[in-house]
Length: 470
Image 1 (tube, one colour):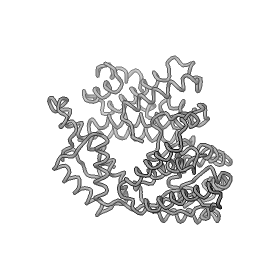
Image 2 (cartoon, one colour):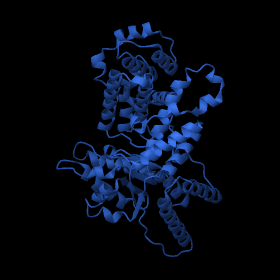
Image 3 (cartoon, one colour):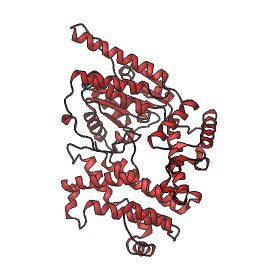
C-alpha cells in the first residue's frame, strides 16, 4: 500500500481521533478538549520543541508549522507559547499524552470491528515522526545537532512505549487507510474471481527481478489449482503444506510477495479472507509468563483466513538465554498451526543463515515448513527499474544528467555492498531524500508553481550519497 504524505497522515490521525472519541476510549470525553484538538496541540508543541532547539526559530520552520497545522501564529507568538507550555527538560522525557488513547484501544481491542487492524497507535507514531523529519529537513544543508538529538530521543521514547504493549508493527505493510471488514465484501461470481486471479498473477509476474521466486510461487499456485480441480472431480487430494520460509537480505521483496500471495490464495479458494498480518518479535513476545502465549493467540486469531507473516523470525530464538519468552511464542505458534491447519498460512522471514538456526531450534518447527524460497539481491539494472517505477507513481522523472548520476551511484552501491545494504529499501530512501531535496531547491525558484517540468524533474543536485540517506 502506498505510504501517505504528512497531511494525509494528519487527516488519518484525525479520523482515528474521532473514532476513539466516539467510543470514549480511556474516558476521553471527560477531557476539556477533543482528542483531535489534543493531537494538533501536541503536534504543535512537538514542532516548537524541535524548531526552537537552537533558541531561534526561523521563517522556514514557521512556514512548515503553519502549512502543516493550518495556523497563523507568528514566531513571537510561538516563542511565547514555548515559554508558557513547554518545560524543555520534562517535555523531552515524556511521550505525547494523546498516544495513550490509541495504544489503549489497540492493546485492549477497544474498537471492534477495527478498520485499522490494531495499528491506530502506529498511525499516530508515524504522524509525529514524519512531522519531526519535515522540521529537520528545513536545515538539511547543516542539520542542527540539538534538533536531531531531541527528535531522536522523542521518537525513540514513543517507539518503546508502543513496543511495551506488544502492538508495534514493522515493515511496509502498515494500515494507512481504514479497511472494511471482510464480511462486508461484495459477493463475487466465479467468473469475477477467475478474472481477479489472473490479474493478480499478472501483477505478480510483472514485478521487477525475483526470477527464482516467481518460478517457485507459480509452481505452488499451479499445484493448488490442480488440487482444487481434483477435489471438484472427487479425486484424492494431497495434504500439501502451505507454510513457507522466505530468506534473503532486507529490501528484496519478501513482504510484497507475501501480501500478493495472500490475495492470490484467496482467489484460488485456498484462503477465505486473504489478509496479511505482519508482526515481528515485538508483536509476539511479552514480558511475563503467560502473556506471550495470549498475545500469539490474538495475532493468530487476527490472521485466520489469511497469512501470518513473521519478519526477522530468528529473533524469537537465536541467541536468547534463560528467561526469554521467544521460545514460548514459537511453541504457541506451532500448536496454532496444527489447530488451524486449514485456516492459516504462516510465512517466516529473515536472513538466510539465521533462519536456518531458527528452524533448528525446535524439533517440530522445521517439519512444518516445506516451501523454502530464497530472495536474491537485486542487480543494479533491477534497482534502476524499481527507482523508475517508484518515481512514476509519485509523478517525478530524472533529468538526463540525474539519470546518469543515479545509475552510477546505484552501480557503485551494488558493486561495493556495505553491511547495511538494503536493496529496494535503499532505493526508496534514495528517492524520498531526492524528492525532499528537490522541494527545498524548487521552493526558491520564482514562478516554479506554474512549470510542471520544474515541479516534476529531479536534477543531479537533488541526489545525495546513499550513506547520507540512512
